[in-house]
Structure formats: structure tokens, C-alpha cells
Length: 241
Picture 1 (cartoon, rainbow, N blue to C red):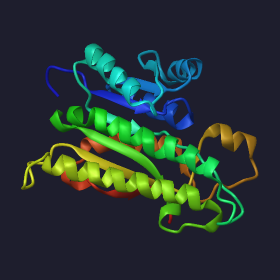
Picture 2 (picture 1 turned 30 degrees about the horizontal axis):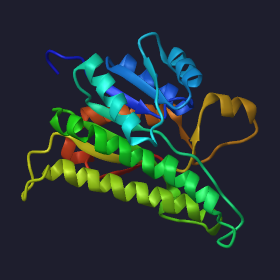
Picture 3 (picture 1 turned 90 degrees about the horizontal axis):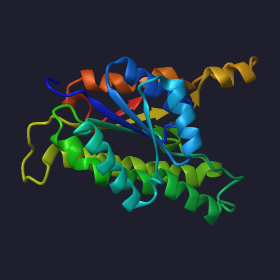
């Protein structure tokens, strides 16, 4: 992109997947802003990802806070070309009867509210970028939900539906007919994520079907090399469903 560094925002960047993704984008030449709710943790994650990764603390469940975050990033970068959304979490139970309201509220806030806020606030940035990309991480549980994970699967399904609506918005941008597609919203589907730390703590496990955080990171960077029409509204499966 002549004249400006490509800028990517990684939301929920404090964990192993956030570190791997921030490192991958930084090594690919992007300016990287990594965002987490805990200031100390996001600073530590940024330091692990590389010297040029910029950490920012923000409560992504707070719409006004996300608007302030976006304004701050725009002042520093001139625009946002990508948002990789890694915010989530797991809650499970024994079956349908004990799916708790407390767990649902947690999953709704972490998995749906944060995604709604981030996409609403950054939508115009992504739509106006010649290479705008948004991606979220979903679960194989959406296609094959289990009773014990009903809350989790339902929240992921809602997040996927919202992301597909974002994809449609990028394809139409308020017009009655489809516009030339430059930007895209994509869903990565994994069974679960694994990193070297998890493997080291559990040397006897095979982690069959799990997706390495480095593989997820490479797939995210690769979105910018693929045509928008090839990835917009797509569920890209990084594990066997």
C-alpha cells in the first residue's frame, strides 16, 4: 500500500494466540496495535511479540471506550486496515439443565458484545481501506453443539451470524447493488488452540485436531494476500469439524 504502513488491531491480544498473531503481523511489516483489558498483561504480551508492537488497554465491552480506542489509533496511524478479534472464553456445564445465566452473561459479553462494539466502531475504517480485513475465531462446536456446551456454542453461533452480516455490509456498503469488493470479514473455525507452553505442560497429550496458534497467525496474515471476494463471508476451517 503506497504511502502508508499497513495497520492492524488485534483485540484480545493478551493470550498466546494474541502474542503469536502480533509477532506474525509485525514480521510481515504491519504496524501492530494489540489490545487487552488488563494493562499489565497486554504490555507483557506486546513485549513478547516484538519491539514494535504497541499495547493498549481497553474494555472492549464498553462502546464508548472502544470509540476512544479507535480515535487514539487513528491519530497514531492514519487509519486501520485490519482487525483480528480474539476475545472469547469458555464456559461449560453438565447438560442443558445447568447452563447458568452467569455463564451466558460472561459469554455474551466476551464473545458477542465485544465483537459488536469493535465491528461497529471500525467498520468505516475497514470499508475505506483498499485491503480491509476483519476476522474472528469461532469453534467447531457451532456445527456440532453438545448439551454440555450449549451456552458456548450458542454464543459462538451468534458471533458468526454477526460477522456474516459485517461481510454483507462490506459487500454492499449501503448500496442496493453490490460494490467492488475491497474489504472482507472472515471466520476462522478451530476445535481449540494450542501453543508450545501447553504442549510443554502436557507432554503425553497429542492435541489431535487442535490448531497451533502459529497456524492461526499465519492464516490471519495470509488474508491480506487473498482477494477479498475469496475470503469475505467465508468460514475457513483450521481443524476437522
